[in-house]
Image (cartoon, rainbow, N blue to C red; front, top):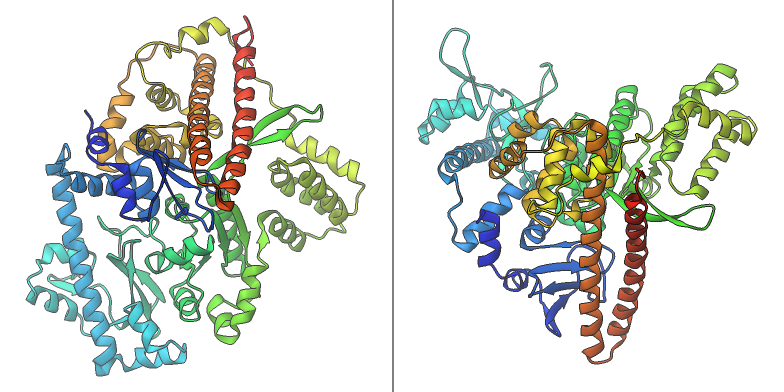
Length: 619
């Protein structure tokens, strides 16, 4: 039995979730107001017999004890595994090695915490920190926010922190590993930071992992960060996420700004859903942390050329890292097909040249609120950016505008919205709408022809009827054939019932390179990945592998939909047996609507299976 299965056997989902939410009895099940979105009528249900939970409201999500704790606590799978193992009284396999790494991380965060306290004390009381206190006064930061963010000051003395921490019992090797000190050129050790305003950088749980530091004189560069360590990787951390996460979840939106001061000023003035990317373009790892809290992201980066480039990279990264959802789309003939669309809203807050969020907020908080409220959807931002960068009176620039905006328009699945933006583009470049539509089709290259292979070969390559898990076979295929990554959008992570398979799939989505994945994964998943990579698969061509994957997607999606249908039936029975109430009537109506949507999706799956079952058919 795996660690995950043993934990799930020992822990009762009702008992665990009731520690977070006040559950009400609903027949054989339990219900509550969903903790992941705002609502008045309870749509969050817990199923003791299945040991699962599901939200029938706006979230539409569900899972087991692992998925609940991960979502509620904003934790990665490995951290959740260790937390629940502790609750269940289970010693995890391979604990000794993981324990050593855990102890190292714990020790480095303790040392960083001591350093943060030391820097903060210097800022508040040291005479030499007067320059830093004057700077903060000039930036209009209150004493309260200085304490909340534990801002600090690094001494001009070359080894002040080093001597202080050694006296507290820290070993020199630990201080080097934490990135707080460096080797002197001629021997000995020296502090990394001198005469700078210090910003402790914390993870989502509030642990100090490293520091940002701003020069208070003419030193270059103006800002520096801790080096990469076993606990600090600025590509995975968002500044102030620990303080912003509740506001992000409550407001269902995050605002990403560029610098420390932008964030601190925003929080001082009540805009508590702001975080910073610390001067770098947003990464997929950072977006992965955010999407546990919200799928609505607004970028507020500098308006200069570098800032616009960072915004474009951030938009692309966010779109790649955020999940798709399957939605029904009506075809011109009246049939229904299902497409994958981005299950998120990405917007851009337009800043005036030379202005940053810190300055705008200090001058006029209402102006900043209006900028956030009127943030442009990505498509409109792209139109405005292209229009401002080209001379649309010139034929070549007209052509270039259509080329640049073709991928943006091509990503719009809704035909009415697409028609609107084709019309808008035609107006922008001053051409007839049909001319622009033809040009877009031309630049798009037309529909790609589908790869053909024999149905019999696909069936032989798909051992779904044997004892192999459909989930693990799917993952083994994806790991063996990296070219299948282009089909990732056909999957949903919801199709995976086993939490370790689900986490592997989400990690593979971000990086399909199995070798890199093996290095980057949490230790708790590495053994499972190795097992999947070693799994024996029948030899097959890329075309046959693609068709085998199509079988897996269809099968897993059908199982997921049937599971939803079963839960809906249970809930409809529970609501029918309950005392009549307005809340109950509203919930019943909601469940009936969900049931219709699930039935429509199941019809789509059955039609696809019937079509694929015909001899010689590879659709």
